[in-house]
Length: 192
Length: 300
Ligand code: SF4
Ligand code: SF4
Image (tube, rainbow over all chains, first blue to last red; front, side):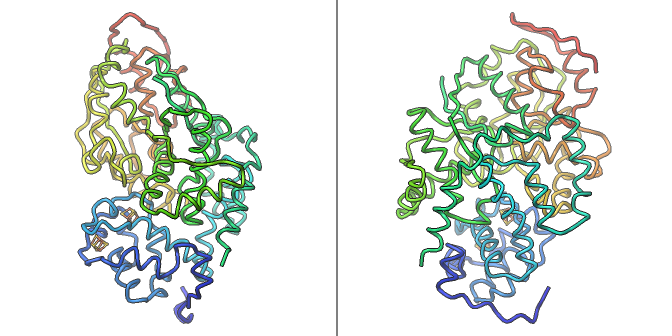
């Protein structure tokens, strides 16, 4: 990861773009953290994280956004809500992890933007088809990732699903149905 | 009993067996389902990392449709991720008074309005609270004696909103499974995360969770799930998780259906990715009890 990049400066416009994912908004979510470590101890994926969740909150409150965005911790959140359930301060920690994903997608480096592609491609498929088309989504995800090994990783599952007659495209009757809603949300989020 | 029904995207494609077994079982329990017309994707777990407004507006669209097309009915949702996405709209609107206005401004693009009138219910909640173990036992024509079942709850059915069970020690499935005559595995992994979409983005990390869950379920004949994502992660990656002996994984309504005397085909057992011959043998050897017996001589 690129450690020499200058710290990200968040303009008010950038806050607006990331909608509730701006640094100050995320700081507000974890402001009363008392550093007890319950979140870290509860997280099923903490073993794979470079920063423990507890450390993420501390760095955020110090304003050390760059350190947080250079870690892979928030991308490893599987939204299990165990930390949110157990935090003695009742903080919405899973929501904070999701907000970090949004912030990293909007303000982060190339590595972060690439990790965000999975979610963006998924939502693009939803926007087009109204209901998620699993096949189409995986294809566009592979294309977007530019990783020739990726389809191979999915081959065993693909073959299993194919054998079970599960890899079909849905009806398509909702195709385009969500276009107006997505467009409206986009215009609302871009509003200064 | 009647509910507005939101199947969600998975149940129309890769989790067809969950949809079919849910409908079959509820029909036999005299529960009527009103399909919500023109429903769309709730955003799954992908909307929140992209847009917070979209995270709420997508499920709010379905809730608005339910309010208009199935007024007065609770919305029944079998997928835990869909359930949480729809449930949280009302919860977050209650906490942030500016939110309903923003959501409705977005829904206005289609002339829809969300008023917050629909109660969102998970299938498990309906089975446990509205239907109950006695009704299940009354409809069972096969006693699942000798079968040990590991109830797997996963995450989002109980967290962050534990509305019908204990989020730390879930047990709402215990009386339902016991009512069928089966043993319930006493384990602590029922609420442990399956890795969810990390299976696509960081497979190594998700596989560690799957391996831990499968290992803990080793004493059971079958794991039952109430979510298509959990089901897929637990059934499709057993060899990658280095789990040598296949363990069967069924949706809860599939197990209920089999106890009701439905055939393997009627609950689409052929669509599951992990069903052992040993489980099929045990199921078919189960004693029958009750009037509506339907025999299905399918070999292992
Ligand atoms: S559990 Fe809550 S209070 Fe404790 S360290 Fe984590 S965020 Fe802070
Ligand atoms: S919600 Fe995310 S950060 Fe919190 S315990 Fe679960 S995986 Fe870890």
